[in-house]
Image (cartoon, rainbow, N blue to C red; front, side, top):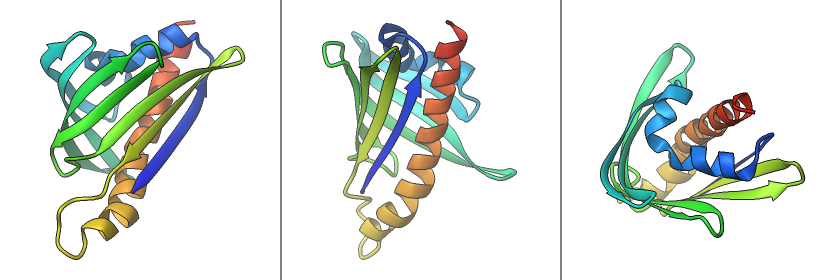
Length: 152
């Protein structure tokens, strides 16, 4: 399963990267995030616990995961490897690049799916990826864009 979400932001690359790395502040900026906790800090990264809502109209479905997070400021990119939760084993990368006077952010999620006999791959490809992961990632990018553009 692979999902790709991409958005242009009218803000300097450094500001966008700082917002992407400042995960503890995401619940302030992103109404669908319930909490983010750094369980272990290692430079800009470490072990992070995240919880978000995936809204379906008036109904909000709770999601939760724990990831190893590391930052490559030279790329620049923010990487995650999900280590707990339904999405254990998922690799995520935020690729941040200049695009003229804007900054492009692309979030790529790669995953073979949950270890559920017979239905794991199908569940990841048909439901978890397009409905949950894309639904949360697209809202996350939109919220980060609002935060960094508001700061301009």
